[in-house]
Amino acid sequence: MRWFGFGFNAFGQICVQEKSDKEESSDAITEVKVSHPKEINCHVDCFSKTSKIRASWSRRASLHLDGDTGACLAGFGTSFSGECCGISAVESRGCKDASISESHLILAFPDRIESWDLQKKDNTPSWSMEIKTQSESSDVKFPLVPGGYVASKFPFYYSVSTHLKAKSLALGAEHAVLLSATGAVYTWGQGSHGQLGHGGLTSEEEPKAVEALLGMPMNSVASGGWHSVCISDGGDLYVWGWNESGQLGLPSRGLGKASQQKSSQQAELSHDVGTSPGEELQEGEKREEVFISIQAFPALLDVTPSCEIQTVSCGSRHTAAVTTTGDLYTWGWGEYGQLGHETLMSSDEPQRVEFFKAEQMRVVDVVCGTWNTFAAAVKEKVAPKNTTEST
Image (tube, rainbow, N blue to C red; front, side):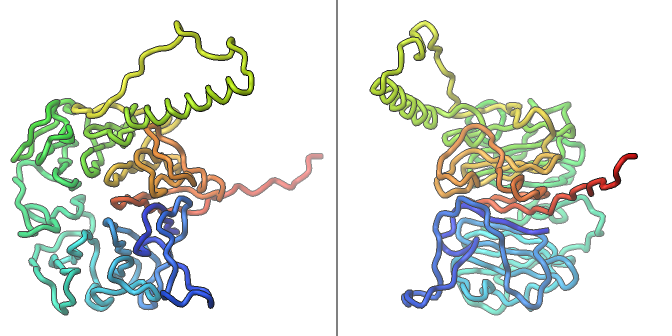
C-alpha cells in the first residue's frame, strides 16, 4: 500500500525537494500548492511502511503499524531532511493510533493515552491517562476511549454517556458527530452552519440524535470544519452543514457566480468570433438556478450512480470519498490543489481523481487534512492475457 498527498504543502507536510547547487538559502524547496498526487516517503529507518496518516493544517503524522509500531511527523517544526522530529521515534513506539492538531499530538497506546505539546520540546507528555486495555477485535475507534473521548483541547478527556454505545466519533472545528453501535447518528456543539443536522442553526450542549436519519443504519461518520457526512449500511452518502465552497457537493452560490462569469466571458468571445444567435440560449430557455449555502438537514448525495461509497473524509471545506470500486472522488474548496484534479479550482460536484485510474491503482483509504488530502492506493491486479490460440 502506497500513500499519496496533494494540497497545502507550505511546511513540507506532503513532500519536499532537495535544494540544487544554485539554491543556498534553504535546505529544501517547498512547493506550497500540490495539485497532482505525490507519493509520501517517510525516511525513518526504524519503522516499516506507513499504515495510517493523520493530518492537521501544518503537520502530518504517519503511523507505522506493521511489526515495530510507532509514529513520525512531517511539516511545521520538523526536520525537512529526516521528516521526523518533535517527539522521538522511541517515545512513540507501540502506539496504535493518533490524532494531531496545531498544538498537540495525541498518541493512543493499548494501555494509555498520551498528549504531547508540539509547541514545547519536552521529553515527557504534557498529559496522560491510563485506560483499560481493549481487545484487538474491538469495534470502538479512536478518539473514543472507555467512558468518553480524547481531544487536543484541554482538559483532553471528555466523558460520553455509555447509553449511547458509541462506536466512532468525528470532531469538527466546533462540533462532534458520533455513531452508535446501532447505526444511529448523534451530534452536538456549535450549529450556526447547520452542521448538526437538526434542521436549525442552534447549538446543542449534549448529544442529540439526528432524527432525519433514524431508521437508516449508518456505518461511518466524518466531519469537516463546519459540515458533516455519513455513509449508510447500503453505501449511500448523506451530507449536511455549510456549503460555501461546494463541500457538500450541492450547488454553491459562490461557485455559481464564478461559473456564470466564465460563461459570460465565453459568450462574449463567441459573439466576437461570430457565433450565430441560434447557438446561444434564448431568453425563454433560461431557468433560475437553486443554490444552497446551508443544508440544515441531511441530504442524499449521488456521488456516482454506478457504485457505493466505502470511505469518506472531510477537510475544512472539502470532502473526499472512496467508492467500492476503488475510485477517489473529491469536491469543495480547491485553492491549494487539495482536490487532486491538477487545477486550483473549487467544485460543487464530485469529480473522480483521474491520477489513480491512469496509474492503474485502486484507492483503499482517504484522510483529509485541513487544506490537503492523503490517499492510500494499491496496484490493480491485471488479469493475465490468454495467449493460448484456439484451434
